[in-house]
Image (tube, rainbow, N blue to C red):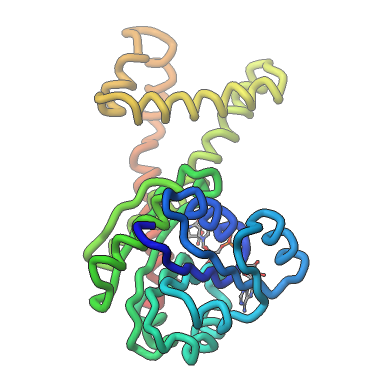
Length: 271
Ligand SMILES: NC(=O)C1=CN([C@@H]2O[C@H](COP(=O)(O)OP(=O)(O)OC[C@H]3O[C@@H](n4cnc5c(N)ncnc54)[C@H](O)[C@@H]3O)[C@@H](O)[C@H]2O)C=CC1
Ligand SMILES: O=C(O)[C@@H]1CCC=N1
């Protein structure tokens, strides 16, 4: 943070552990308050973040905050947001990371006066390699945009969107995307075992291959298509495999899967 601000996390689960760790590592780390109803989890949080204040009362946490990060499951968001209303007189920035909860809904639950940023993160944020889409309502000023961006950037890449519906596409790509890649890992592992490799060997080779390919693509100036061509010797093994993927219309299948995810995101958002 550029100045000593107070960040209150509502819900002290996996994502909060990751984000609180991220912002605590920041050069000018903010004061952190975490509200969590489960006593056992509060004890864990206190061990992980000795400098943070761990409480059981959402309103108490929010009342002193410059930023309130809503990190509860979407199903409990309405109750949590409505319960916070009286504690938000200072008009802190609200940063919601709940999947599928629109700014309009949050706005209604919070009383229609708060600056609200909606984030669509993904689970690799848990290891500091997330990808997050952000959308801000009109009450969010430049300074607050910077703060929201900095919080999410502490666990990975951040991209802003001017149109909230684009977060449905982000959900279909990077939000759900880790599951597509895990499915590919599973398939590579099974395929390796079918070819006679020990399953644990097939798994480690599959994971390292996905990791290595992603790292190479991120660090290279070349496009994934060029990198793919570079692996593919004419008449060689890769070409034989890629032909099977093309015959099975893998690109079309991925596109259809993403359409289904985006459609489901729209339905869940109540659009
Ligand atoms: N797009 C994605 O893949 C991801 C989205 N998310 C979003 O982030 C949010 C948090 O996810 P996780 O940290 O994985 O969930 P989690 O279940 O680990 O944490 C939620 C925490 O909220 C606490 N909680 C329950 N009721 C509460 C209440 N009334 N007040 C305060 N705290 C309460 C729970 O005890 C729990 O510790 C979710 O809304 C989820 O949709 C998180 C990870 C990735
Ligand atoms: O599957 C879901 O609905 C959520 C949104 C993105 C990742 N998980």
